[in-house]
Length: 286
Image (tube, rainbow, N blue to C red; front, side, top):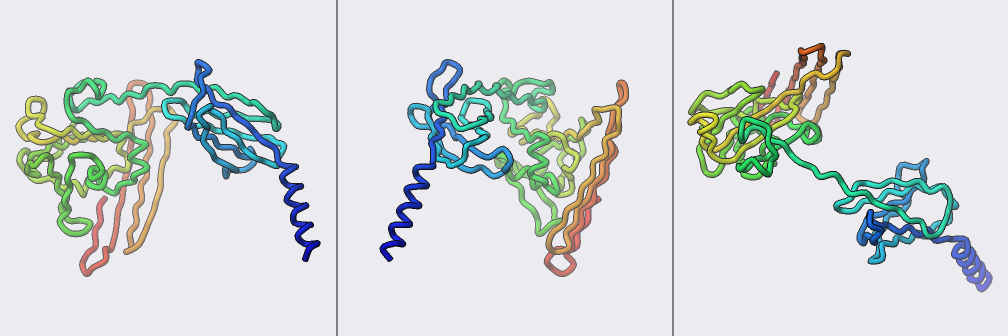
C-alpha cells in the first residue's frame, strides 16, 4: 500500500516536471494588452480544440501542455478580426497582434426604393441575407418572419393553414408583399405567407410602419420584399438538396443558374410535402 502511494506520487511529480507553459500575449495594433480575449490552442492535425481560455488583465493566456508542438492558435475578441497563428514549437513570450475588424454596414432598398445604409434609412428596417436564410432553412416566408422584431405571424391551424402577418396592431390586409420588384398580393386582400418558399431567396427585407407614400395605400403597416438568387458566372451552376423528417415530411429543390454578358438566369424548382400528425392533414407545396 505504501509502495503504491509512493509510486503514484512519483508519477504525478514526473508529469508536473514534464509539463511546460505556453504563454500567449494578445495586444492591439497600438501594442496595448487586450483583456478578455478568447484564445484557443489545438493540434494542427486535430479539428477539436485542445484547450480554451481567456486573457488576463495583462492580455496573457497561459496553457499547460506536455506537447512540444506545433500548435495552432485562434483568438477571438470583440471589435477585432479573428486572428489565427501557427506556432512551430513550444516557446515563451509569444505575442500576437490583433487587427481591427472591418466596419459592417447593411444596405437596404425597401425603405427608400434606392440603396441606402440602414442607419440613414429613417425607417425601421430588418433584413435577412442569403447566409441567414440558408441557416434558418425556412419552409416558407412565415417561418422566417417570426424571428424579426415587430412581426406577429398567426397560422390558422397546422402546416397549410393561412399564415397572416400583423404589424403594429394593424390588420393582416395592410401589408404589401413584393417579390423581385413585382407586387404579389391584392390591395386590401388577405395574403398567405405560408405558401411563399425561400429556398432560392437571396435577401428579405421587412419595413415596419406605413409606407403608403412609396408603395400605395395598401402598405399601411409594413412592406415585405424578397429578392431571389441570380446567376453570376458563365459556367452554369447546379445546386440541389433534399431533407426530410417526421410525419412523412420531405423537401427537395434544384436550381440551375448562370450569366452571360448582360443577361443572367436562375431556373429552380421546390417541392415540400408532409402528411401531418392528424387525419386529412396532408400538405403539399410546389
